[in-house]
Length: 609
Image 1 (spheres, helix red, strand yellow):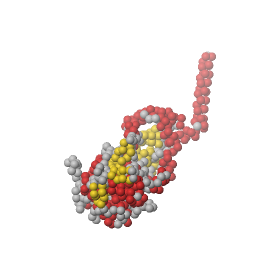
Image 2 (cartoon, helix red, strand yellow):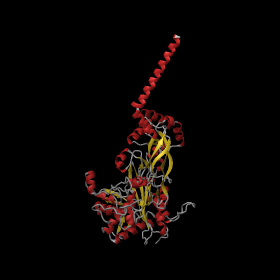
Image 3 (cartoon, helix red, strand yellow):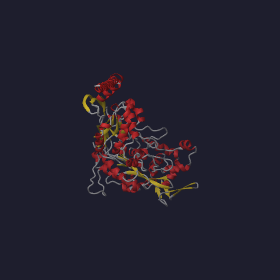
Image 4 (tube, one colour):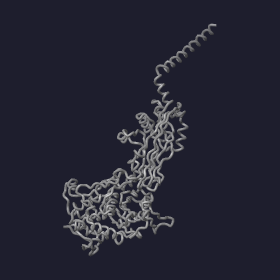
């Protein structure tokens, strides 16, 4: 009996104890922890999701799609779905499952907290990683897989430096652009037209309020504001010309710029080696990152961002200066012996022994150095510099692409400021043939030859159709430069004749086109590279030299780094682009390749003189 009473009392004590614990827990849940749990419950139940706007499509002038969007999936972090004390564990688990750095995942959590909105951890997730996340969803609080649209470049590396690529907004850009509606985690244009026209391309993001369960699974959509797609963009680029340029530059370091000299539209802009902008969608593999940061620097836009000595291409400037300033006429005789003496210094011609007695037009035809040495010494560097700036050299062209280099047209004031020294006569001699301090970019060389085609009228290179405000406004001439529109007609007549003779009978006979008079100038510029001195090969050309009203025109500049003489390494590239422009078959091409005129030239294919 006493034993039964003892067991009964023990049971009462246990019941009382259990009841006390339960009451205490209820008090905590209902009173002490009410605010915390209520907030967490609301976070699990309601969620505001931002919907990125589809980015505008980029097309070439013929309607060929160069940048579009495709459906993909992203690993997204939702801070509200994961208590702070659990995030380290989730970060460790997630990093291990996906092969990521744990600290990188933790940084993403912190960024999501600061922005008070979800942040994408990985874009363009593979099916294997989707399966891994799904299988481990129970232990990955706050981690979800969401459908997203990502940028897609169907032509791969084609015109990659002009088009650019997209990526997640960097912290420094966020500080600068936050007032324009940019937020952490946004995808923006990083380079090229993707960057310059990002505001137009990105559109306006939408948002929706959804109800989810405790695991973040969608229950229903409560409200939705749809996104406004970005505006499409049409480039001046002709992808058919671009294909030729890219193919001809494959395996080298170099660049090409083709323009319509009449209005400044850029028809092709190639830089080699190129890169595939699709690599920047999702995570870049270590192997690809190594290539992008390798010694050939494929991310560098050599067409606008690199400068080189122009070599004999600069003789066009010297030639025009001498004609206009009456230091020579087309028939002025010169004796070419292969040597030019300045005090104790000897300046040599590219051809040993020289060319004998020649006139001034033949000096450009055969690129005779000693003739330009003599004229450069007599005219002086200041005079040549004023004309060079009139051709658009020594400053940015005004093209709306990032990271354009300025180049350099030196003069006495620049040298005093840079070196604290005076200008020496030998520097004028060097300058006359494009050596010494002078530096130009390929797009400046294209502007130079376009200005020749226009008989002195400068245009502003631009890449979007229809042109934006300012695209058709000619660049302002710097103080002291020569307005080449004011040159005498006989000066331009002689320059055109000399440039045509370079192709018909001079150093660029391999650039001839049937039925079309082509004018141009080769250039071979030495550049110090360690102990060796290697040659950059240049060729600039325009066609037709004598256009009829309404006739399609093109101006092209090509450069290959440390590859040899311009006539042999750069002229074939320009010629191939011009053949495609005018629809002239290449006699050396395989039968399967059919040349068709570009849209820019289609109205006037039958040309000639």
